[in-house]
Image 1 (tube, rainbow, N blue to C red):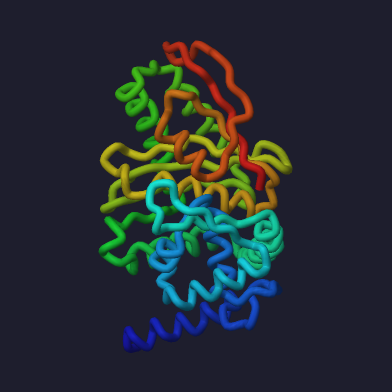
Image 2 (tube, rainbow, N blue to C red):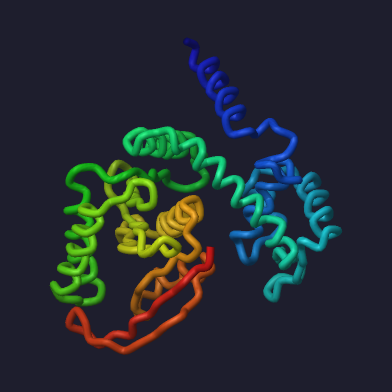
Amino acid sequence: MDPVASVRQFNRFYTRRIGALREHLAESPFPLAQARILYELAHRPEVTAGELARDLDLDPGYLSRILAGFERRKYLTRTRSATDARQQHLRLTRAGHSAFQPLDRESSREVRAMLDPLSAEDQTQLIQSMSAIESLLRPGDEGPAYILRPPRPGDMGWVIHRHGALYAQEYRWNDEFEALVAEIVAQFMKNFDAKRERCWIAERNNAMAGCVFLVRHSERVAKLRLLLVEPWARGHGIGRRLVSECIDFARQCGYRKLTLWTNNNLDAARRLYVEAGFQLTKEWNHHSFGDDLVGQTWDLKL
């Protein structure tokens, strides 16, 4: 079949499959464009109309009319930027978040209903194929492409090796840390629940660039674990994307809270957690990995 015709056929199938042509998305009062804008506002604490128009490839006039409608419904507030008086930061109000939450839950339910009939292997193949499509079609001006994929045989050894080597290099932590990582990985592999747990491996230029794990802690609580981005791959949004994938998957699984443990000297990772909405809930002094550290627990209500 002609490549153009093949792509158009897939587009027709997928837009129908996800309900993009319905008047309202996920049984909500919002058409697709409005729902997409609500999603961005709910997940980006401070964003300008210009940034939204650019990132969503929307006509500024069309976006302006949607935002004005949100303001009339008391979903949105604007505050003038402290650094640029010409710009205004957009924030969802409590009413805006209340309007978004049912849409978010229903969208997740629809995705779960689409995935549930598939085996764990088929789900893995589907996600991997979606990542490949995204990577191949990413515009060149968006920076170097990378993909997220499920782990393959041998990847878990890489996770342990790179954590041990990288944390020794950057923080001078001893082999106690590598042993801890090995224990976490072993437990993940032994007790893996494909419906409620995930590991993502990031690749850039066909090289392994990072990883993160989402593991079940209880029926309502999931843990984000072993976030790592290789130094040569930093600055391209990989860490932010890995955290985002964990949050989105935790919501899809019906968890009510996502928690993580870190140390206060891991500045880059902590900035990602703060940006994603995590709150510091506990802090304590401890001596581990050959160093005096300040441990931290960060939680995100889902």
